[in-house]
Amino acid sequence: MKRLLLIFCLLPAFAFAQEEVDSKYMTGAVPVVDGKVMFKKEIKAPNLSKDQIFDAVSAWANSRFKTDKGNWGQVAYSNKEEGQIACYGSEYLVFADKTFSLDRAKTNYRVNFVCSPGKCVMEITNIHYLYPEDSKDRLAAEDWITDEQAMNKDRTKLIKRIAKFRIKTVDLAENLFEGAEKSLGVQPATAQNVPTPPAVAPPAQAVENIAPVSGEALQGYKRIAPDKIPGNIIKMLSEDWMLITGGNNEKFNPMTASWGGLGYLYNKPVAFCFISPARYTYDLMDNGDTYTLTFYTETYREALNYCGHNSGKDADKVKGAGLTPVTTPSGSKAFSEAWMIIECRKMISQTINIDGISDPELKKQWSGKAMHKMFIGEILNVWVK
Picture 1 (cartoon, rainbow, N blue to C red):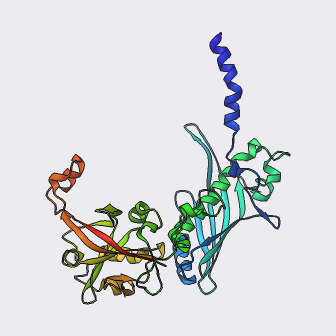
Picture 2 (spheres, helix red, strand yellow; picture 1 turned 180 degrees about the horizontal axis):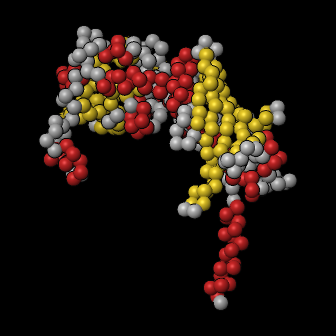
Picture 3 (cartoon, helix red, strand yellow; picture 1 turned 180 degrees about the vertical axis):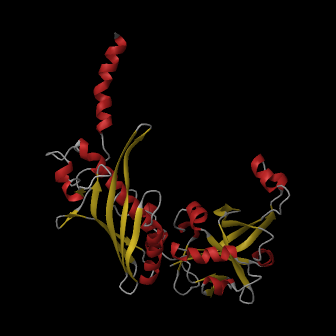
């Protein structure tokens, strides 16, 4: 009897918890412009030209809007001179997927981009639903998920039968915005249509408010202190990659890398990276005193791919990747396409001994293979655009 009483006491609280909805889906979550539902966002990338933004967004759009696993899409219009791209998408919004029950709606929509220097305006509109998915009648977002249609009179709750459409549509818009932002090297904001706060601002934006430090200049860049390096270094390496460039004006070579980090050693700000003896850059790093680590937006993904799959022994990698060399005041080599250049002076170089690997899986993986050398360098200069 006591157990039954406890269950009945908990039921109202449980039911209320089930009805709670994240505030981002509540009043104003579905914008209406001139009577039409339109999700709109201005994506800022101040260090990129109109053509660079267009190329990056176009590459992402062609990858995102295509036929794949029941979804359909296409880039319907593209004009680089005007900076305009228009896409159509059609995909499933899955509300529930259980063993004997699949509840979903087919959703059609349009995405427009207008690219200009330093920014891209993105709009998601013409949203319709087919529900059930084989229905011939289309439900327009304007008649289904707006505040007027989807919320109660007091605007305090979502109407249950419509809530799932509204929530999934807001999530879809957020996902599309994030994809476009990432293509431009911009870290998405945590909430729909909310400007990225300074604490998590993307590299291209975060550097705007960083005061430069005195020192020798590098054209097109401002010099900042090492402790003001913007961005998430783990993401910048594992997802975005970097170029390690050793050598000088007489002979230099870049290589793509995703292993490394930043830190503090012997009372100095340092950067560390790892290079295999098989790489052409290895000897340049081994014999040189300074080198650079350079970071790029998604626009230059192909250039980094090229540098990672071609050797400087066999070809002019810089020309093949379409990069523009620059020389730092200290004589190190970097590239003007980079949004950030970290120049280092070699402090320590040490080959990793397989006996020093404690992880059994890693030890097995690298047994019998040439081991990488770790290079630790004092950070001399940091330049950002």
